[in-house]
Image (cartoon, rainbow, N blue to C red; front, side):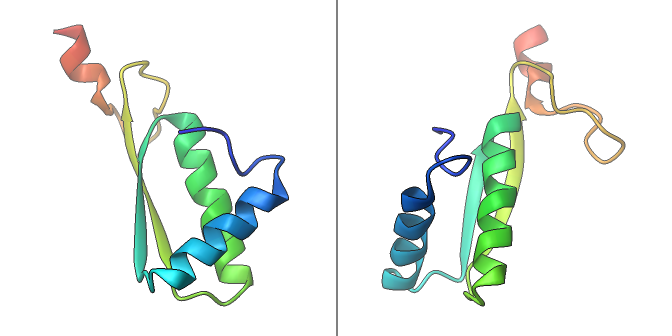
Length: 82
């Protein structure tokens, strides 16, 4: 996934228009730290504009760079190490 939300407000607008046009209740973003950062930015933007679309970030990376108490190891990293 491109880092489309960090600096390009036009991409925010395109995302908003798309979820409204498709009448989406939810959007799942699967990926690494950049993808999940973008999921967070989208979720905050949608919430701030009172859009009904909820965004879920699902960690999956072979880099092993998504570690925290809630995600001790991500899908992708474990399998790539075996």
